[in-house]
Structures are given as C-alpha cells and as structure tokens.
Length: 136
Picture (cartoon, one colour):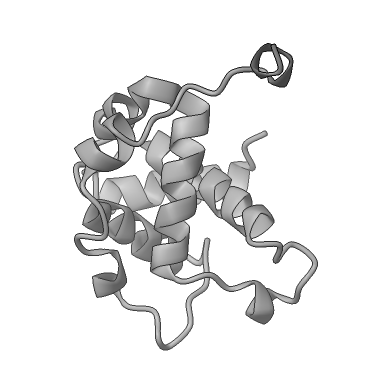
C-alpha cells in the first residue's frame, strides 16, 4: 500500500519537523482521495480536481469519523494533531516535499481555526445503523 519513494519523503519531512507522526501524513492522502470522491472530482484534470483547505478539512473530518468512529479525535491527537492548523502544517510540509501541489491562492491560514476538534469529532459523531435495521 505504501510507496517506498513517498515513505522516504515522509521520513525526511519528519526529520525536519518531528511534530506529527507518519500516520498523519498517510491519512492526508486518504482524506484527499475521500474528499475528491465526495466532491465528484475524480474524473477531472489535476487543476479542476484541486480542493481548497476548507474542503480538505471537511472531507478529513468526515473520513476520520467514518474510519475511527467515536475515537476519531483521540486517534488524530495521538498523531500530534491538536487543531486544524496542524493539518495545514502537514499539508504544506507535503507540498514542500513535492508530495502534494498547491495553487497560488492556497495559504496556511486556510487551515486556521476552521473547526473545534471536540465539536467536530466528539459531538459530530453519529451512529449509523445498517439500512435493514432502519427499515423495521
């Protein structure tokens, strides 16, 4: 699943900036794919497929809740991520390493104080029952 070249770049990023675990970087790739799919941009060109910081954070929050359920905040915080600005730092580290691209309008401030983790992850979690259970 993990590409050795990408793995080496993430290791290099972490040597320069050890604040966040490697899992946080891999999760950005997953969240990016999830967000592109959710927004229906998967068949567009790279330029058309671009998503902004807010869109990525919304998709990231949704993907974390789907992947980790009520433990989403605990998992994310275990990676060293305490606020949305930390995700921005990770994204821009990845841009600097050539793992992601950005447009001139993309700035680190796009990620600052977008949502509160407790509100988004703890209160934002909803139990989803299988369809056959909800029809009874």
